[in-house]
Image (cartoon, rainbow, N blue to C red):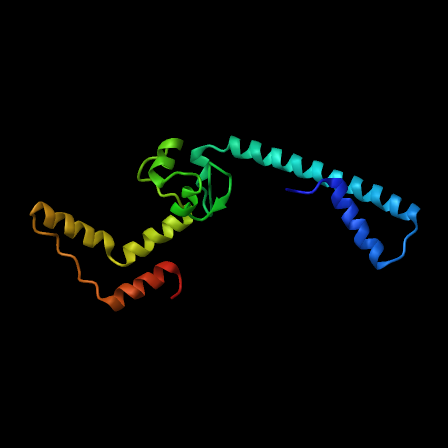
Length: 165
């Protein structure tokens, strides 16, 4: 259970009076000023909480996924990726979260910049070509000839896509 403001102020003044000698009048004055300061802090904290609550309520699902962050519409926390572990804390999984807030079921729950860098790295590794080849094989059609990608070439393309080269 949390302490009341009076208890916190008393603890602060008690610690202060233990380190230096204070008269009873000084203790009373310090106790009053500390209590008022704690009250002001509490009021400011409550106002900030109210403002954050209003901001999180005003956030639409489309605006919750931004360039460098994604905001959880359940609690208002900001992440690069809304992980299954975080969604589990709200008793949801990715599918339920998407349905609840009207996202498409294939919408990635990560920041747009992260999604773009993953897409770029995948293309550099030849994933789209391999995917087309695999789909064609499943349908029984001969695959369009794609250049075979060696591990070294794939690693080089990935580094270039990330910006290391």
